[in-house]
Length: 129
Image 1 (cartoon, rainbow, N blue to C red):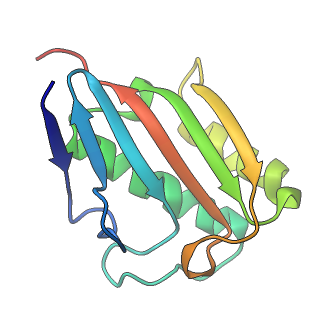
Image 2: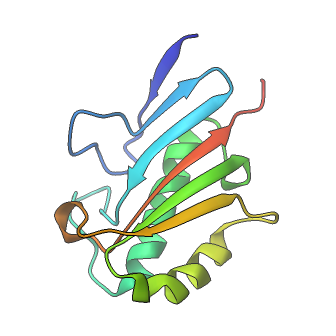
Image 3: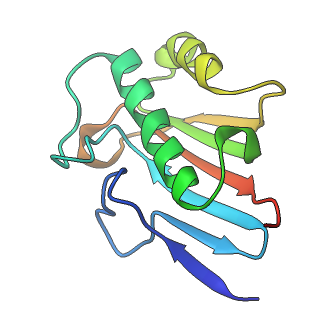
């Protein structure tokens, strides 16, 4: 199976030795997105709601570059620096995800890159062209 790197300037550049996403057959594996502004590479200002919104917009951009939409996601993993943010991110997440929402796991973690409060990774299925 061939692996193909997915990159887009509409999402933040990778901050390490990884791809924004990898397409392998019909599957697209999106690396975790944090709330970086794709233009500046800096963490967006604001609360957890603003960060969650930026994360989901970044994820949307990566999926778009892979020929997918949020409706193609089958599984997400959400990492939170503070589990108390869970109800707020649920509300933002629900605004983005179509019905039926993808399977999801959510974890509280000790810290995230660049001081982010949320990170989301996803797996999507591309439809044959």
